[in-house]
Amino acid sequence: MKIVDLQVIPFRVKRQGFRAGEVLPEVEAVQTLTKIISDEGAEGYYFGGHGHGDADGLTPDQRATLQGRLKQLLLGHDPFDREKFWHWLWVANVEENLISVIDMALWDLQARHFGLPLYKLLGGCRDKVKAYASTYPNMGSPEDYAQHALDCKQQGYTHYKIHPYYFWDPVKKQPDPGRPSHIVQDIELCHLVREAVGDDMVLSFDPWGTYRTYEEAFRVGRELEKLNFYWYEHPMPEYRVATYEKLCRELEIPILSPEIAAGSIYTRAEWIRRGASDMTRMDVLRGGITGQKKMAAIAEAFGVRCEVHMSGFANLQVLGSTSEDVCEYYERGLLAPGMDYETPPPYLHSLGDAMDAEGYVHLPQAPGMGYEINWEYIEENRIKS
Ligand SMILES: [Mg+2]
Image 1 (tube, rainbow, N blue to C red):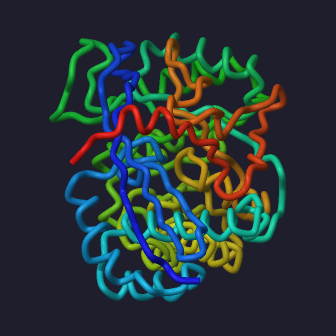
Image 2: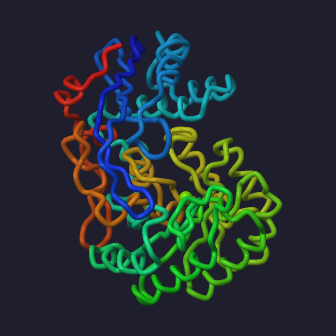
């Protein structure tokens, strides 16, 4: 089999937004579908590829790179040779998300070709994965967070992750670009959430690197320990690795990082070796499914967990092919009161990550990534170049 074409199809979608406690009016956004085609008619797809999850389309520059020099590199080669392409693209310093998009469309192609859900091709391990509710930051007052956590518990979630206040003053209720963190209110909301949901809900906390000093990160970490939080994610900027080593030494709560540091598996292996993280973190846009599977193996060898970052079809497929002892949870979100997470986007006929009343997300059983594509919508909303 040979690759004969690679296309990136941009199309319009309406997107709900949320900022500082309020649902914003829908705005128009661009989503992309990357499509790789073989000479035997097999096709593979990937939606998105820019930013977190799989909801953000590739930029015009990224589309041009994919359809230009990267397509030329792949044409005529066997679409099943993913490991070879992964190596080629890494040594050529191609952007991590573009390596990833190619890798994932090729995995989808092979799984569709064999008529298998992708996780079965990877090596199935489980058909359902525990989910956690992941909040928007700046979601409202500490009381709003507590109420939302309780609502999530009643919906079936067994784990709630707080993104607290950042770049936002929760007292004055206005943007605060120079003072990204507000730890007094962060601590208050953690207390109120624990009080609201009781002792039997797993809680975790992610200030997204906004604690600029060790002291701030340490003080909040001590409070999280008292409240029996499960993990403390990405508390400080990730370019200061020694400060993370110190935090891991001093705190008992597991530190989950790096999340956004570049360098895929290489950076994360180095953090584990240096004792700068207790749990590691990656997602499929930092090396594709191939990279994420390598990362799970590295984490397993070190006896640490690799918690998969963000939602999305490909992240879920990786989770279906790994043990709960290695990659425990699926991140469902971002969530906030008034935000609709349960309706599929208009270009898909079904949600990829529907959750049951016990808090599990079930792996889609359609061949490949699990997309049920609404081709009519994509054609009607296609942006012609
Ligand atoms: Mg995070």
